[in-house]
Amino acid sequence: MSVEIRELECFLVLAEELHFGRTGERLYVSQGRVSQLIRALEQRIGARLVDRTSRRVRLTPLGEDFLGALRPAYAALRATVDDARAAALGGSGPLRIGFQGVAGYGFMDVVREFGDRYPGCETWITELPLCDPFGPLHRDEVDTAVVLLPVKEPALVLGPVFSRRPQYLAVFHRHPFAGRAGLDAEELAGAPLVGVAAPAPDYWREAQAPSRTPSGTPVPRGPAAGTLQEGLSLVAADRGVMLLCHPTTEYHQRRDVVYVPVAGLPESAVGLVWHGERENARIRAFADAVAGDLTGPGR
Image 1 (cartoon, helix red, strand yellow):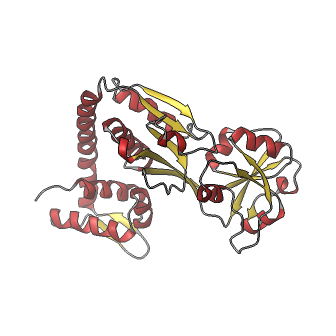
Image 2 (cartoon, helix red, strand yellow):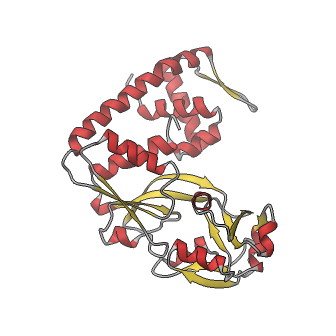
Image 3 (cartoon, rainbow, N blue to C red):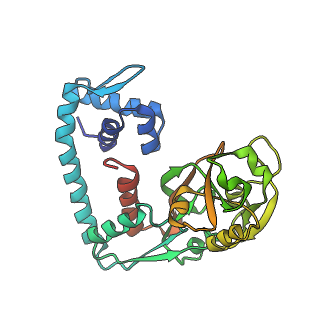
């Protein structure tokens, strides 16, 4: 029978997670799809690789042996593909990568590794303003960008999604919220929320600075910021509070701003995005590197 790479990748992730739900999250498929892929692989082999009950998941002895043989083989396969891509990408020009203030979180490690893997493809890094996450892609100023979700632009392609974390509220260090260990999303109604300035689309601005709490209570509108530093400066001036993703809070520590986790809001996440009409081999290779190093087997 032919070998299905997706089945092997699913098995590798499941062997790490030992949990069907978490495996599905890492592969961006449903839990049912994970079960389907594992069953298909077991049928190809002719024996069970995984014992699963309502309480635990573990590899069978055959599954352990298969895992030990598969890992180096999978790594060798990836290396072969990387070598071929390196040859294909040589001399094809730079890859222009935009980011929204979150490029430090494992992502720069991927950029460095990508450069080592494809020395013929130079990478340029550009910071994108908070208020214009998608404009540089539409204007062909960058080839791909790491942006906060959601992404609903019809012309753009959403690739790997990573860094799913709880949201935090940035507050002035003397604000009443500053001494709290955590907040509930309903408490957002108690302080003006710094928003995002245009030209960011309305749906994206609403996601970063919701106008209502989950129960529907209006959230007071604070001033709008065009950049992350503007937003943090407004917080430091006690002009409002600001929702931020966890990576941003770790990389932008200030003595006059405190970050407090907020329960009851959807997790923040960032994704790699590019323009569908300008997709090329460099972008696909970089997206695969991000998926493999930040979301795929071995992460």
